[in-house]
Amino acid sequence: MDDFSEQQFLDFHTHSQHHCDRTDITEIISIHLGQDKSAKYFTVGLHPWWTTYPISVFDKLVLKDKLAATNCLAMGEMGLDKLKGQSMDLQIKVLTSQLQIAHELGKPVIIHCVRAIDQLLQVKKMFPNIQKWCIHGYGRNTILAKQLIDQGFYLSLMPPKDPTKYETYFKELPHSRLFLETDSMAGIDIEEIYLQVVEVTGIEMHALKKQMTQNAKTFFQI
Image (cartoon, rainbow, N blue to C red; front, top):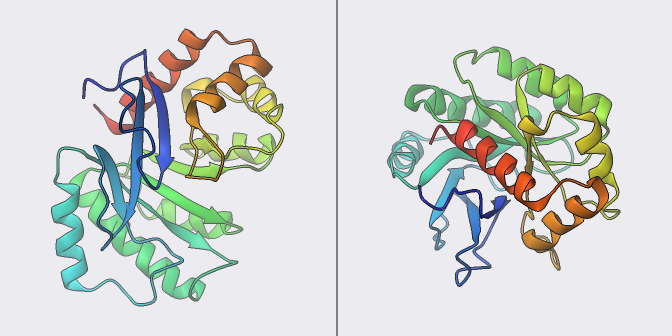
């Protein structure tokens, strides 16, 4: 895992490789089960938007096979979404099926959660042995963020429309529980995100890279 160095810009969550030619950028590609994407490092799971049926025995076998790859760092993204996808009952069944696999294999998990925090916290209580949880695309207030961190979550921050929002996050939240991501949003580049954070917070670039890299090593246990 030589790419996880203090000289890297780390994109914690994206859906396609955008910087194959850049040795100073490490991208972790989120792959929905069944997709075929090029990825040096990836995570794999069943996204709630695109999962319309309970997980089959075959799905479980394929997931376990993918997760066994040395460059597969976590299970996800997976989760709960009240605005899009199937019924909450089905989403919870799909999520818990995946979490059982993550528990068996000792993998960290990356969560998609939209307006379903209460349900997610109830599910999390069912899997106390999964040590590393991250909610990706976090863009809500710091009060909720602190509560989630207290519940054991890491947070990967959504690129905000107003970059000064990074100042609030980095001022009020423990840096050791944060990640930066692009989520493959149009016009968003991970190096630009790092530059925005440096500008609004006053954190030195090297210190920011070092913190994000150390967080990743801790979270992915590498």
